[in-house]
Length: 246
Image 1 (cartoon, rainbow, N blue to C red):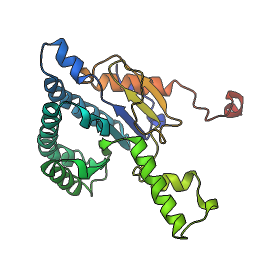
Image 2 (image 1 turned 180 degrees about the vertical axis):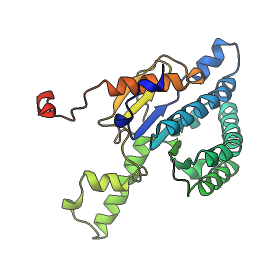
Image 3 (image 1 turned 90 degrees about the vertical axis):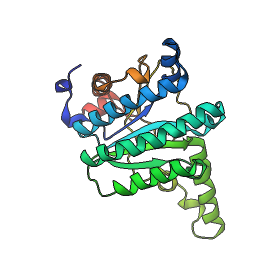
């Protein structure tokens, strides 16, 4: 799939990806699950570079959910070690490509060394002016919505806001994703047809794209295919086709 076919005037500003299939990819090769996670790093690099080259403003990758803490401890520990290693080794590449790193989720749940590497990389890249790469780590959409609701409720109890002040804009501003536009395209790899507690509020009008490609095999060409599919869709936002054409 050639990126020359992509209409540069109709790129999604924000792409979100559920990176799924590492475990199955490893199992097919008779390896442990961590082998799949290790090989998934190459896909992260490919897709990040592909998005940056096209001029995508934001890319959010679902790296680790709050539910993932329930996986076997040996896998969780290996994942956290891999995360530290990857952040440390990829920071130079982020700087070279002008990519700004950010993260959403419960950072306090991450191991200290992982949190330190993450925060150092975020600080090192904060002045970069290219694409923003957002890692969803120890994240769940329900957690984010519940926390936003508590924050708004506390402001109401304090008399800072009234009931009439509570609207979509206020909720948007209170979520951890408030700095970024809502994703226009959400991709999930591996053939699973679920959202898995990912950006539930933000993807209300996102175009959903599912592919059977397992994440370690995902490359720029697959990204281009998803974007071309996105560009072939009519985005109506509740209106009719006739209203859009007029």
